[in-house]
Image (cartoon, rainbow, N blue to C red; front, side, top):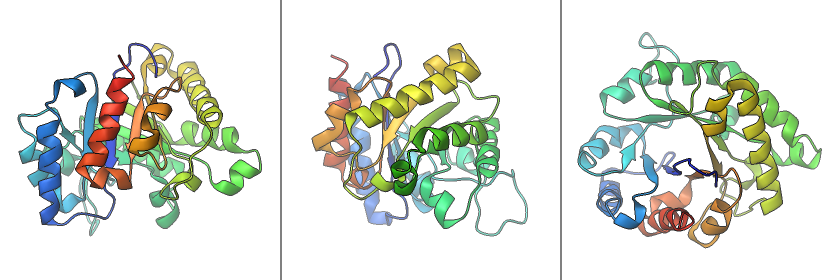
Length: 256
């Protein structure tokens, strides 16, 4: 972790969760008041169909609720899309943009992701900008080149430590059970920190850098102990309250 940066553990539910999953959100919401978790921020990003009801469950607790994506425009003829203003109107606080599944399944480019991040920031929300290399790119020794290009293209010029979070998710580790070595994670996060500090100076030094990719209770403490890892973006493990809370507690536990 980075000294003096408050960690964030975010859960990305992806296309999972019907109304009965609100019970899980409520369990996490109530548990978020545990004093053992007071040193970290906690966020869940459920599907948009659950977003508003989820925020009503979290009105008086520390757990925050966010969106998984947004359109770059504030409104208009964009059937099926959701704007950042709509997420803010539902009391969401953050939006994930540029997740590898959006980049792959929907062909999103760095410039499109930057526009979405700008829309999130303009709506008063925090943009969680995702970056990461494929297995082929890693094997070819292109990891840092890929990260450099994605950071330059996807992160807006008005990014600050308050309105932007960077999530490093090696594509080949998402949902596969595979996790990079500690050295690989440390190298990637050190590089991201250097790039952000070079571009944004003190703001880049304070920006939260999350690790994502098969984070689970059994490896969370080890991953969160790595330099410049300021929290986690959790996929499948965030769907079970006990697993997500265990990751949150492991993260908080590293703070002493």
